[in-house]
Amino acid sequence: MDASVAGVVGAAIGVLGAVAGGWVSVVGQGRQQQRQLHAERAYRREDARREAYGALIASTKLLSASWWRFSDLVWDEQSTPEQWRASSAESHETWVQFSTAVAAVAVAGPVAAAEAAEELRVAMYDWEMAGLDWLSAALREGHGQLPEYAERFKEAWQAKRAPDRAFQQAARQALGTEEP
Image: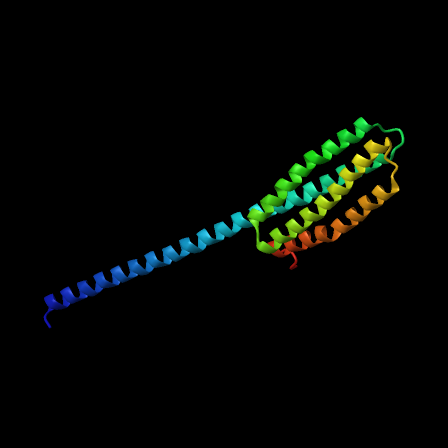
């Protein structure tokens, strides 16, 4: 083989090597971009979940505190029906925040956390209904010292505790915070 043919073959091999190297580089960059995109999506999803879970936990606590204020107020002999209504209205406003937070968890997922949030919503609704029934009876009777309603209220509060803990457990699992 003469020198000119060897030069052409060498150049062709060099071009093929450069093309192959470029192709490998492009494929590698594409894969790296896909991994980065996947990591960014996972980060945004985890961030959205943390925000939704935190909002649900906070609104659950606010709603609980609101209903306990109502309970204290309606039981107080010095309180008035207007105060009871105002306290109940405050609880309703807090319910809206709570309900919105449950919906945010349903969107953020995963399914196990959404289901646990829904079970918590049902339990909180039962507690809410116990409080509203107590309010109605107090308005009818002209006083709120009605032990049967207070007892139902406390039972509904107790019943919401397990779903509250179950949601927090589902949130920890979804976020992977159970592991050290």
